[in-house]
Length: 312
Ligand code: PHE
Ligand code: CO
Image 1 (cartoon, rainbow, N blue to C red):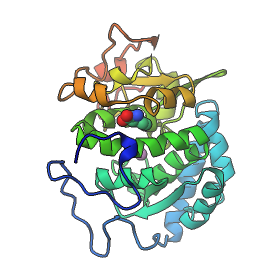
Image 2 (tube, protein in one colour):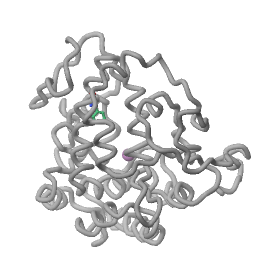
Image 3 (cartoon, protein in one colour):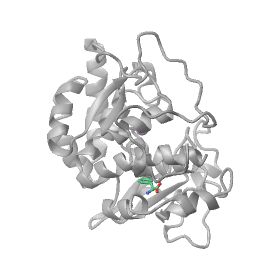
Image 4 (cartoon, rainbow, N blue to C red):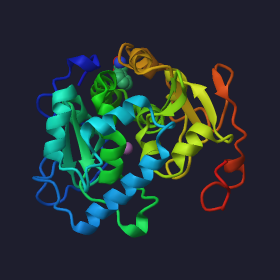
């Protein structure tokens, strides 16, 4: 496959992966097709529904004043707190009427290229299963609470909804350039751990922040982490941690700022100039940074998760 603009790929059907593109060898469970979708959403037990309700109640306590206005508005419009794990079909009808997105059930983490293809078609793949009581506070694999509570409210925002679709298209382009890790860092620092500067103050819009109990407070208020204005060239060269609070958060001015810096820019040049691997440590502050808050990094320096360090 030649280097074409992201737009030129046809996403009607799952595009062919070229032979030299790396794809993680995930094993497709029995009964799952090429699209990796479950034939239908899981049936949840009353226990499962209670786990959702308790997680929901805990987050809703923490989020006012910390979550982005668009996120809180989305939560309400989609009625995600009506009780129990939401039904994807009903949720998709509401979301579809707002921005044309739907939510589709998947059994587990799915291959990147399939994930990108769904996004390019405005389908958000959400984990079918819900965590148990024993992993209530922290799970590594995204479950239905992370995926639906964390990600879906932002899809009610028209500009963010377009960003996610463009990101899906961009994924295929990054694969052709062999720069998936760099584009992954952009996803990490925006979709999962992004902050937005609102008139009233800093707010979180990243799903990784909003679906957990401690990171919303840490990301917005703690003195440890750096908060730096988003700069795509910088972020795509920056390493990230997947199993602890972030040492650095990147801040956008608005969702149209995010869209302009990404979707409205051609990444070809950037991909060609990016070195293999990351250049900057996840706690680094560099010369070009627009520093909003220079973190003390004391949480990280004291040992982070598992050390008993306070997330201050
Ligand atoms: N415009 C970018 C490109 O040329 C892609 C992009 C779009 C990246 C949206 C992230 C989000 O590849
Ligand atoms: Co996520």
